[in-house]
Length: 146
Image 1 (cartoon, helix red, strand yellow):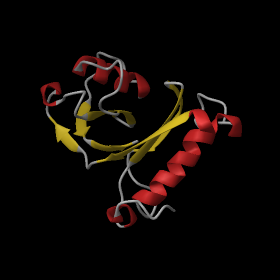
Image 2 (image 1 turned 180 degrees about the vertical axis):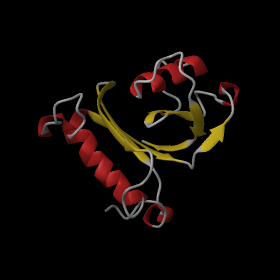
Image 3 (image 1 turned 30 degrees about the vertical axis):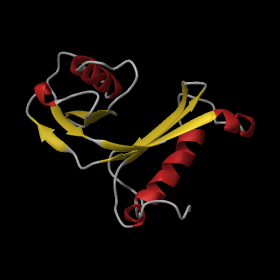
Image 4 (image 1 turned 60 degrees about the horizontal axis):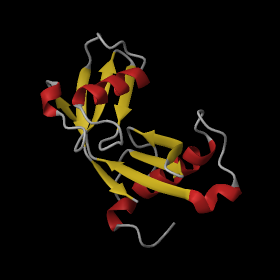
């Protein structure tokens, strides 16, 4: 474990997303909405391993690719239930949509997601929730580490 991590990373528990890009194209992304590990540092390590080897959308990352990868870590703030989409801003807040047992999450400040409606649409699609279905909305912020 690197010694340069903030001290709270060894004490606090949070959800974490690790995104891996190769030549600006997504190569892997795995995250946890709620923490499963002992602390943020362990959550990052676990999700980084999963992002490079277990994202079902991609083949595992090969050793030869390592010099070309950019890695982003998003540490999630606690979620806040909101009553309407007017309380969202896709540049500042991520969104969680919930319908019954289906949940979809979209991180904030993603390239190509410029409106609240786009943000909710993508989160619903990830959760396999129809666009016309009503959902519970939650927002959160992230601390993004490059």
